[in-house]
Amino acid sequence: MKVPNFSVVIETANLSLADLDGLKETLASLAAQSLPIQRANEVLLADSGDVPDDTLQHSLGAFPWVRLLRLPDGTGYEELKMAGARASTGEIVVFADGDCLYPRGWLEALLSPFSDAAVSVVGGETRIDAPGPYGLAVAIAASFPAHSSATGLYRSDRYHLNNVAFRRSVLEHVPIPSRRPCYRMSGLHAAALLAAGYTILRQPAARAGHAAPNGLSHFVWRFILMGFDGVVVPRLIAADRHSAGAPGRQWPRTVALLRFWATQAAAKLREAVRESPSRVLTLPLAAPIFAGAVLLQGVGALAGLIAPRRLLAAVPEDILSGSTCELPGTSGLG
Image 1 (cartoon, rainbow, N blue to C red):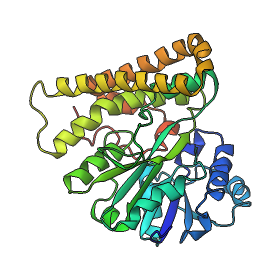
Image 2: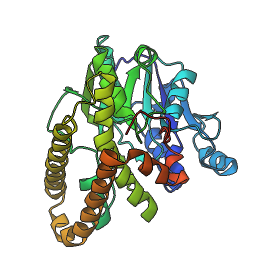
Image 3: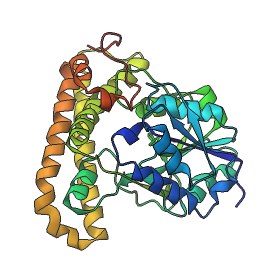
Image 4: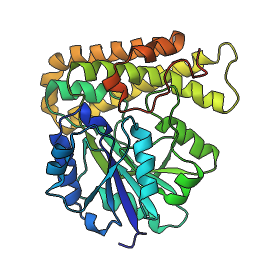
């Protein structure tokens, strides 16, 4: 396979919330790729102090092809990604997360479309990958859509920063935003890319498994912020297009969001049961966890509609440490 030269950027922003062993598993999955990871110009691990230095160095001992990129404390998720992109040299920049697992053919599938010079952005498909009733409930409730039925590249209006590749020129022209009043910025970036005339392609063969929220606090706040972003990000996109603020405009966006969540939850449940029919037996145990996640998303969505600044002020610092969220008092939100 002929692909342009590439770099891989991973960050540690989520590792204060997830098990550090997840980073070792991530790197082991990259080491096992069908396209050797050593062909990358560099594999950068961007860290802003989320992991103690001695622990991090020990974790990287088995992976000499990883280069540590130290950044100041407080550097957020999207800023870590962009700092890694700027420090890399590849024509293609691949973004991965330190709490995801990447199957053997992932890198090859993600990069192969770039043999076409017209391709600018390729995202894979990600879902929560965890066992048991908890894993099933979180996978259905999470914001990652169900796997598509596509057999080849297809167009999309979104991507996930844990599973995407960009031409460097795209990131130079339309960098990933930060310091906006939402938790994750990829939705804003995807909208900006489309507005700038770029096409986002999705590669169904590039699938990744994401860790489930680790611990009660992580679970609660992740789903609250998921619901919050669900209503705030479309509002910010509309504001960027100079079309926000008219009374009644929020209602159609909220209805569309609820319809999307319901459709995707049903699709993910069907997919999970189709892959393993025995999961039907875990549904009674998964149902209360799923209901709790949906309730938390509802709380976050309601807060996003009526009191976004108050919610952002209430989020614990250890949760926001992995975000470049603009704190209350400086945003244009009501």
